[in-house]
Length: 433
Ligand code: URA
Image (cartoon, rainbow, N blue to C red; front, side, top):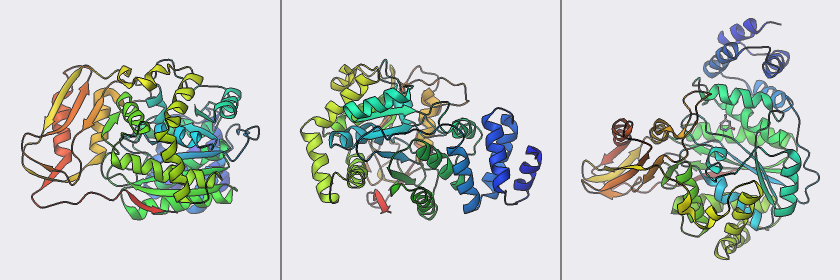
């Protein structure tokens, strides 16, 4: 079998056989097939798409490309959560400790930023000393002792996805349904949780821009998971504007901590409660959504969720003081306010553009080798449906130096579209499977 023939077959719109898919996944994982050939195949898949059968084979081949975590040493129903990626999506940072504080063991594997979207691992590294590069044993021990652990994808867990993820990130091949479904589900299957809650984003800041595509992606992933014996649920949530107000890394951690203190932005808080309720029900800690919500609220008001975050940060080498004093999380020194250049209502935001503004500031990767600046980002003041007058502050930019401020400011303003007429607030939850 030759990689050249596989690329050509897909380029010409053909359907790859199971053997061909397994061949390129095995060869790429072992380093026998170079990045440039796999980039080419990713682009061919991007344009020609994959059938349901191809997607399932790709998922299983990637899940089996390395070791699988055996979580049987952890008591209870282990619940994992994964987002398809968005702008300002710091959900796991607040959700995982809240759910763990309610007694559901959270054994979660997270990723780094992808394309214009941020990643949980990058954000968590804002806590000095914090590491997600923990061993499988530490991962399991921490879940058993404090109820929560988050690890990065190790070199031996779904390594094919690890390599493909980094490659797709810099070759404009992220936003394809089959590639996203197989990427997410391969690592979720390899990571061994009993139940998985998916947060499938939809809108201009998501990889799936339309609700139709987002529901289809959610259904495909739920089907793959259930077919592998997992309890599954998916929430389809709005990503037509950034989630919450903070976009970046350390700045998002601050917002997640505010939320655990009961002072988070309304949309972000609502999403965390919706996903958390699903996790509690799937994890057998609540009979229904209502009971789950009450438990989650108690975890926040009683301070247990914040305490759980502190235990988690400490257990993974971070400084827990930052949890109780979030102002210690360093934000970049150069600040610039972006002001509205007219009166009106915020009618629409090109949400991916806001993610790109953060990336341009250094908060995301331009190449596989990029080192990101955790202190940069944006803090929004206005979102869709807000009424503004000329001169009102739309956002504050946090930059390392002056050099990018002009370009970022201009890009940000171009992403905000005004309307003279009243615009209603956006609905956050679009559906639940
Ligand atoms: N998250 C992932 O893990 N993979 C994707 O392809 C997209 C979002």
